[in-house]
Length: 276
Image (tube, rainbow, N blue to C red; front, side, top):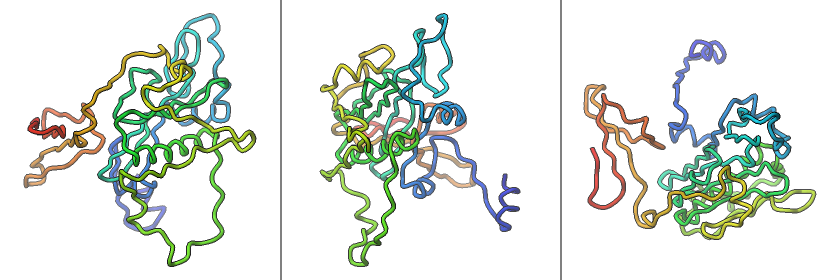
């Protein structure tokens, strides 16, 4: 790939291979600090694009099928929804929306979740747990719009023809609002019916229609009160491979990042606790 890039741009180019979910902050800065990860293959998702509401037919002769959108299926046919787990790193103002199985057990009170309905009679919902701050909810609305644009449900904003005056251009500091910012983007509406494209469902006030979008309905999920006072956890990988001792902070870490050949410091954020 590096050779092909050099032939294309006719200059020295360094190609860095990245693992999904480990995108550096420098890359996310070119993507408005937001990234959406869909399950399945691009061809399957694009073929279903535009017909999202119609894929609810049952499977013929019983049995199960593989969902082309990367979701889970039951014996009755396709799932009624596609769910995205939305997480915001408040330290770097980066937001990731990762598609997860459409199951209520995947909900976490600390984050926001977007349940995209595939049933024409049930609306989509943005589920907001008790833990996210106002700024995290605001960024969740922004990345939900990107998801709706991907599926062809929302329309892109028309380009502005009037540039900002020099005295009124937004500064770099103003683009990152504080956690106490009360302003949230409005929910986009259908241009034909003026109906909101999704509804906001705070935790413990969910309507029955939201639980009907999950495979097994309403089930137990991770809910607690520790998210009110602890800071985001940190995953620090220690290494001496470069000839000196170095510590690297791993963003969006998972259990697969634990390796028997390395030493890791896990700071859970709770007081008087640290794991090595």
